[in-house]
Structure formats: structure tokens, C-alpha cells
Amino acid sequence: MAAKSGHVMLSLLILLAFSSCATVGREGGSDVLASLDVSKYPDNVYVGISGPYSTKERMVEEAILSAAKSIHLNQAIALDSRLVTSYHSSVGLTSFAVDEAAYFDDTAMAQTIEALKVLSVQFDEQAGAVVLVAYPEQKEQKRIYQSIYDDQGRPTWLKTYPKVEGYRFGIGSAKRYYFLNDSLEAADFAAAQNLLDLKTDHALSVEKVSTHDEVMQRDLYQAQRGLLSGFTILARYYDKETQTYWSLASCYE
Image (cartoon, rainbow, N blue to C red; front, side, top):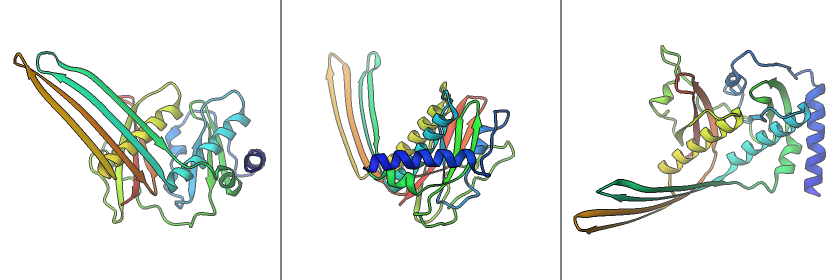
């Protein structure tokens, strides 16, 4: 029943998006990341991005789901990271494997979608649909941080973590993917992993070193698990020179 209700409400939200006076149509030609910047809004406003699907209705649907996902990630995100390496002194690194995963509770997704208020919709050749929504169920508060830029127009958080009492910050990066939403998701996930490195509830490290015929072998297994509360993407930046996307994230201490 909840899933059906969520589908109906999503259809209504899409209808609202196309009929609202707040809806804006835009076909490329400007900085896409600027349309994703919600720093001037209170922290119960979220942005969702879809990707360039075949129809506008599909793009709006995916963008609304993306925004709702951000709300659930803000409530809690669980991370699991595992790393295995093997090193030989004669040849260097011989093997490397990493397994990273993120989990969140989506059981109330239908109720979240039902509560959303669509503020605006924009369309872009790279991003597909960019939907701005308010979540009235969350108390409206001022955002904890806004980017400061240096003389070259680069945000200062690329070099120095912001400092705000009660919060921890993480930075992630990703190379450019074919679709913008994939690039941003990879950078966001890297920022979450950075937070996990800084705030780990459980860490395990097992190292085995052996020597045979003056050849050393070093095998290392590391595992990290953590639960982040209040996870939020505060800012993004694209470095055209290196074609790299950067994300600044925060969570509660």
C-alpha cells in the first residue's frame, strides 16, 4: 500500500512540477553545478538530479527520487569499506582489492515523497532534470557552512577542512563520467568514505609479514565500518583543468 501511495504521490509531484509557476525550463548553456547549489536555502531544502533520460516526465521522476534519497541519507548512512593488499620487496605491489558499500533505510521513501513540496524544476542537456524540493517534516534551519573562494575562484575547502562545532567534514573527488549524475554520485561517495576514515566506529587491521630467500612479502587486510548521522553534501566544485569533480560533505560529530 505504501509503495502504491508513493507512486501516486510521485505522479502528482511530477504534474505539479510541470504546472507550477516556479518551474523553469533551461536547455544547457550555463554552469550546471550552479543549479545544484542550495546554500542560500535552509537545510530542509534538497536538490535532486536525474540524468538525460528520453522523456521529461522520467527525468523529473528520477530527480525527485534522488532528492528523497538525500533526505534518507541525511537521517543515517552506513558505510562498509574493505581493503586487501599484497607487497613483495622484489616486484613491489602485486595485488590490490577494495570493496566499498553504502546502505540507508528506504522503507519510508513513499512517505517522504508524499511530504515533499516542489520548489522548481530545471532541464539541462548534461544533468537532465534538476529538481529543488522542500521537506516540511524537517525543521528549517540555516546551513552550517557556505563556500569561500580564493583569488583563482577555487573554494578554500579544497585545501583546508572547514571547522564548525558539532560537525565533521569530508572531501571526495571523482573523475568525469559520461553522465553528470554518475560523476557527482562518485564524488559524494568518496566524501562519505573520507568521513568514515575520520570517524570510524569499528576498524580492523591485520598485517602479515614474511621473509623467504631475502624476499619480503607483506599482506595487509583492513576493514572499516561506520554510521554517519546528518550526512549532507554542502558544496561541489568542478576542476576543468583536471576534469575532476569535488564534493564537500558534513555529518554530526
